[in-house]
Image 1 (tube, rainbow, N blue to C red):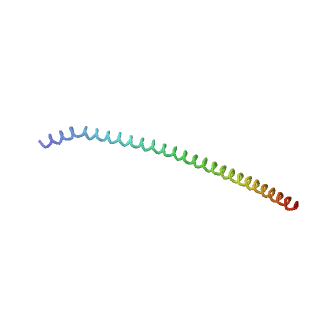
Image 2 (tube, rainbow, N blue to C red; image 1 turned 120 degrees about the vertical axis):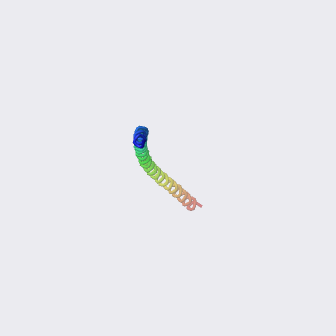
Length: 96
């Protein structure tokens, strides 16, 4: 009777256990695939981020150059205006 019970237990439980192992294997494989896909996506996003950072630095440098050029031009115009104002003041001061 015990032998029959052991045989029945192994015959009935073995397919279930094997099916569970297949399920676990399939589940692990699916998780590995998902993890590798996420890793590839993360690397792709990291590359995009690095490219965006480079672009931003380039834009900031161009902005800074243009700002400095504008400030230099503005200073030059201010100097010209001051020179003209001083020249006009000298002319009016000499002619009473």
